[in-house]
Amino acid sequence: MADDHPGSAAPTAAAEPWQWGEEVWRGHVERVRAGRSLRPAAWPGGARAAVALSFDSDHETPALRDGETRPGKLSQGEYGSRVAAPKILDLLRRHSAPATFFMPAVSALLHPEEARSYAAEGHEVGIHGWIHERNMQVPPEAERELQMRSADTLERVTGVRPVGIRTPSWDFSDRTLDITREMGLLYDSSLMADDDPYELLAGGEPTSVVEIPVEWIRDDAPYFMMERYAGLRPYTPPRSVLGIWRDEFDLAYREGGVFQLTMHPHIIGHRSRLAVLAELLDHIAAHPGVWYATHAELARYVAEQAGLAAPGLPAPGSPAPEGSGR
Image (cartoon, rainbow, N blue to C red; front, side, top):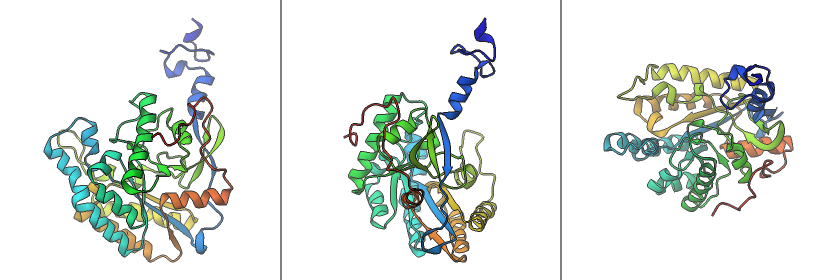
């Protein structure tokens, strides 16, 4: 049968990847792609590099998402709000370092004073799903509704409308970019195609959506997570992680680029790990010409420097915009 051949123009839905025709595998690759680099020629105030710190304030939501409702697991997340978040805010205050807190809407509803404190101290609060759902496993219409509902909830709790998103677990479905464009969001921070910001392409076409890329190397979770009944254990000593992150910053500084870091209060906020973050910020402070920016500030600056049009135009085939989703 023709569909069984690797070069077939129309492989069946059940075809193995090695049987896909070029239009199939190329279509998957080009659905969402990195466009032009948005690293600017100069940073504000003549800074040599930009630093974008972020914290995913998940707290209890990953457990709730998985249907885990027992107190033991939930208490792990509660630590992030009860103990870690105040310490993190104090550390950022001492370094005059703004940050972005990506917060699931359910976290904001569980801890509204925490969410409001982020905004009150000049930090950004970004979209991070409703209950830290895996958006590649929910129907497209549910992903859209949850993303819009999350934005509405964060605005209601904090008084500030979010302009950016980090998808929960960095899951990015075939529909995520369409929804992000429909909502008119300025940026995404879930993908990994560069060290520095870039413009997202949809089907090869520019979108004006800024991507502030993440990487597992610059995330505390792979180094420090622990699951009692699984094989997941924190094998990397905190001081070794400090060395990795310090090298990441040093090279970004040398190149004149962006050092972006992703952390979680319930993970980085423990004493031995918060000490690592404090040392890292001291190391950064020893370098002249560093611009600390929230993800929104970074995205706005690189978009303006590159002359990007305002985002928000629906992708071809997207549903008609419906305002904010209220």
